[in-house]
Image 1 (cartoon, rainbow, N blue to C red):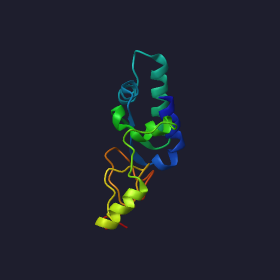
Image 2: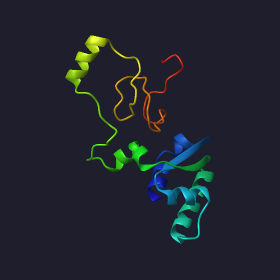
Image 3: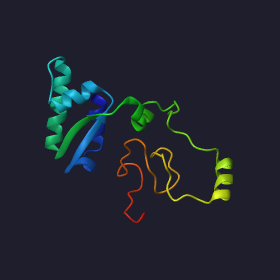
Image 4: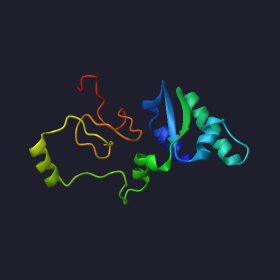
Length: 142
């Protein structure tokens, strides 16, 4: 929960005046924030209240949602900098160039994330907010 609070504080200028969803693979964090506290841990209850008060003071409308650990690719990458993320892979550049020469260049990078996209327009199989990572695209791809 402390890590989530540090991220919220760091991004406060981006989050202000918006409805924001904090996604966590920690069910306790999600429960304490969703229920505005809890009874099991006084320390977590105080921290949840502190986060929610901070959000109110900074014009951040905050809700919490659980995301399974296997889908929490981007934050796992941040916390495991020396490990390879299982869902992050790409073709060897030499092989990719041969395929692209044979079949042409794609317009959409499918199943990419902000960590490995190769084209400005990409689709992510996991939550991947483009306002923080990738290029925001209009409907016509610009």
